[in-house]
Length: 85
Image 1: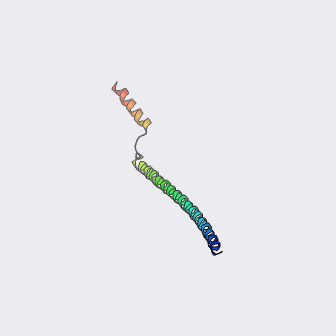
Image 2: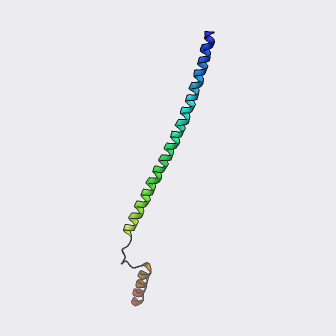
Image 3: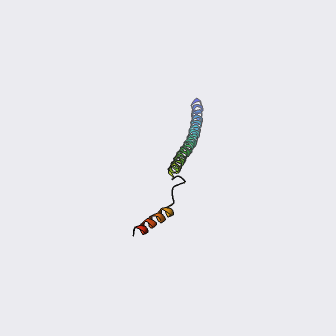
């Protein structure tokens, strides 16, 4: 009789342990998914920062307002060429 009681207790404890392992596995999967999401967001933020920095850099390199347009440069070159002939 005592052996049967111990066996039943062992089965119950094993069931509880199995349930705890399953819960821990589920929590771990949730944490991994959250970590993956956060790393993805971090990567996106870094990429956006780089794009913004590149755009700032490009705007700083843009020609000042008194720089002639391509059409104006072309016209000037064509006039010089025509005068040279």
